[in-house]
Amino acid sequence: MKIHWFFVGVVCLLASCSDPFVPQGLYDYQVERLITNDTSKSWVLRSLTVDGQNVEVMACDENITFLAETITADSLVFLEINKQADCSANDTLFWGSFRASGHIRNIFRDSLYFDDGIKPSFGLVEVVTPESLIISFSEGAFSERYSLSSN
Image (cartoon, rainbow, N blue to C red; front, top):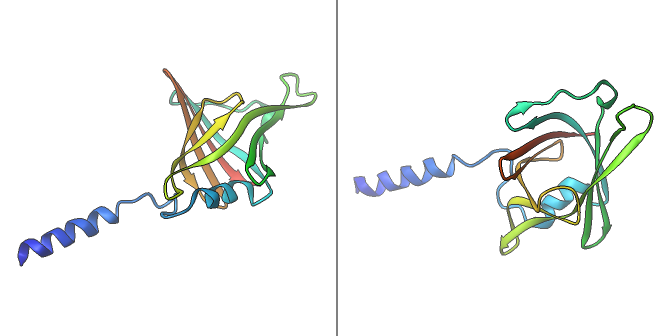
């Protein structure tokens, strides 16, 4: 009987170790809606880490904005809008079309898949809430970590 309670305790302990920032049991389309607000959502860069080092944002780029939009029911895009090097005008970078991973019965796992843009083919989602999105990219020895908050 003691072994039974031991295993119950171990299972409860393991279940309590889940990441509190990625709500468990979300479907892939629910994560996409959190990111796009169902149609369009602006995000603001709070911090950027490249290869483990914090990157300072240029003075004219203090409000780098990201836009996640639903183009059609199955087409979502992610854009980065920042100032050009001389701070004279905005420049838009197309991160790519994206979709949330849903491997088992469309339950979201941990990644966003990107196509046809400047980012690697997938980004690891560390945090996704209506107010916060943290996503990491790795390609070879190069890594980036973006911390965004809703605008």
